[in-house]
Image (cartoon, rainbow, N blue to C red; front, side, top):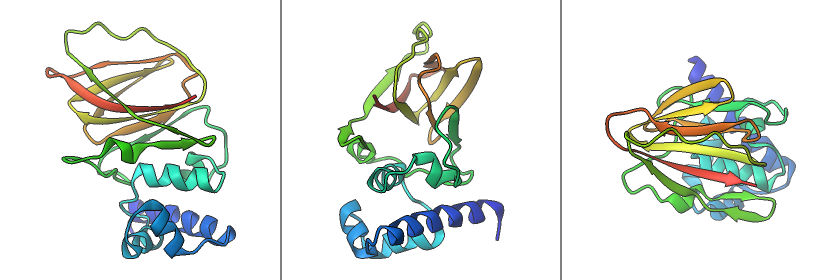
Length: 186
């Protein structure tokens, strides 16, 4: 089993373990996540192709940190998780991507995603801080995410999940406008 497959399988096992520990059936989870039982079963058995929105929903439902499902570590989010398209676990994506599928259930509230477009000529965003957690998923072009003293260039399909109490901002890193969605849970 390749490293990526092993890591994905471990994600599926963690999801399955949480579900079983809370005495919830696969059928109930499939219905709640509005997917077929076959698809949900495949998520648990392989960990492959589980969308970020489903992982958020599962984490909130069972009261664990998002990063705990991804990494198996219960540490607080004082750093970041970077997911590259095609490396490890992929994120479901376009065309026809439904932004509402990214809705982040947090503390009993649904935090709706915001679509952001940045033109190459725009000045870099002022670095800001806020409470909670932030998730960015790049849809088109390339985005430079500045997080503290680190910089990440994210291309279409890449995502980053981080603690926004550290100064951060985004700017376009391509010759064409970039587009991304951000979900901020305060």
